[in-house]
Image (cartoon, rainbow, N blue to C red):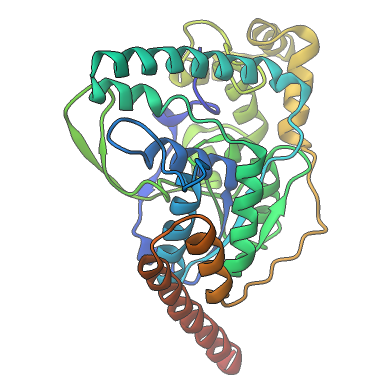
Amino acid sequence: MKGLGVELGDIILRKTISLDFLKGKTLAIDGYNTLYQFLAIIRQPDGTPLKDRYGRITSHLSGLLYRTSNLVEKGTRLVYVFDGEPPELKETEILRRKAVKDEAAVKYEESLRRGDLKEARKYSQMTSRLRDSMVEDAKFLLDLLGIPWVQAPSEGEAQAAHMAARGDVWAVASQDHDSLLFAAPRLVRNLAITGRRKLPRRDLYVEIEPELIELERVLAELGISREQLVDLGVLVGTDFNPDGIKGIGPKKALKMLKETTSQQELDHLLREAASPNDFAKIKRIFLNPEVRDDYRLEWRSPDLDAVVKFLCNERDFSKERVVNAIEKMKSGFKETREKKTLDSFFG
């Protein structure tokens, strides 16, 4: 079975960029994707997530505050986009993910009983569950930080891609490649996990840097259309048909797609990857997704007192660290606003 999102990494043309490259650019961030990363990564040595005095998890709020402040300080404008109601076809993938989390939770408890903290932490990262209350807390914090967020009617990446296609944001920021299938002109990966990262099940670390993927360059390099990219995704497997064609990776799927000479042959391939009734629905999800246009993007300077009240008084954050993060944001916000005013004056 596949992991989160469509797996096209082996054939996608990308280039490494720096965070400084993103200065002055607006990014639509996949909110759920990012919060899950923070829930998985920000943990105690035994795998326990950060919590306040009442036992409420705060790992996602910690990651959201400090990552956002770092990016805003560098002059990047952010808008977070959150998933709405998932398409019916996603139910199988949702149940699969739940089963993986349940199994990991059992192994986590077994590792703790053995006193194997290294193993426990590994399994704990696979048990992360994003509750509705956590998402609401994240949205509340974003409001206090002056960072806009958009509630998608369905898939968050579809909404973010739509905003990028309209030119309201420069790129989508997500770890998944699904945004490309939703026609995002640009995708930025590794935005929230830059730095050293440990390789799974190995005592080795690799440097992770932001990557830029441009849809037009990808399609030109692969020699296919965007609709064919969606077909390729279906063959490999998406969140709406998790298995795809067994044993088919992106390279082989691309070869098969290019060797297909008729619509009849293509339909036959797609029926192998998804049921006859489903593959047309899957293509519609990507080619004509449910999105909204009635969003408003407005950035404000963060409300320091309100952030301190929420994070420090209510959620037990360090006041010194929170104040430092907000000051960084204010500095970046001021610089961005002054540059925009200057550009308008000379424009």
